[in-house]
Length: 312
DNA sequence: CCCCTCACCTGATCGC
DNA sequence: TGCGATCAGGTGAGGG
Image (cartoon, helix red, strand yellow):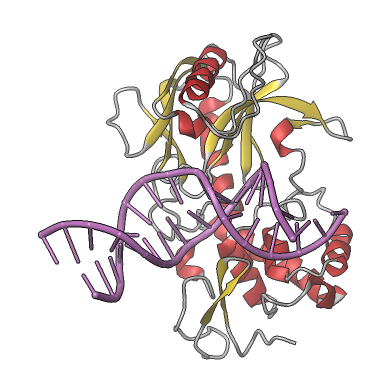
């Protein structure tokens, strides 16, 4: 369940080790961890947009990935929402980036060449850094909802380059270019329940189930409130709550709810101790003492205080 | 266009 | 002790 703070901790941890480094070798242990990687195809008529991964397509995918990633010169890692990417900086490699999404349980681990294997390593990159020497970047992912990929960079309206798979992702609330007014207006235009709107990455990115519940608790909004019934003031409060909870989680190194989320050194963050709603079913609300309730919303579990977060 | 449901995965846990 | 069912959740395809 890595969300914005967890992905940002990983991005920042990776930065000193990968910026200016070169990929010297790569190994794909499980091609299912490449589901976002679209092989460059010639005129073989195969297409390459299939979503079901046949054995043949899987082999094509991992061969293509290994071939193209080997030798790449890496720049500074960037992030939007839960996606992160490392642009390739050499003229010949320009226009593409190594894209990563951690999904539910993905980890990017920085290891020395001779370090023992971690569990669930799916893809391994050997990199050489001018000052840090030889390192391994291991992509481990128990549940395989995450993936690595090579993706082409495309220009946004402002000229900045982002991976093609990130173009539909909204900016996140910590992005200076986030448009508060547009967010408030869009929430109020929609009939969908506000919890589902928070999870919609095309509206606001970086929010997952944990921080959605925390922001709703902080702004005293019931998760089933339709967007159209959220006042301008409440929507602004919700946005402020999101920013506040993201910043606090970031300061504590992220939330580790179940041992899956760790930084690049395999260490857990501390924010789980500061949660007010998520995972606190039956425990007293930190504001009013009422027992926290769990209800299904949009196919996911929502945790709320039935007294502080009244449904209107 | 908008909204909702489901498939994709593994491992921990629960009920029998 | 074992075994099947259930649950967790981010994303995107597909249906209504």
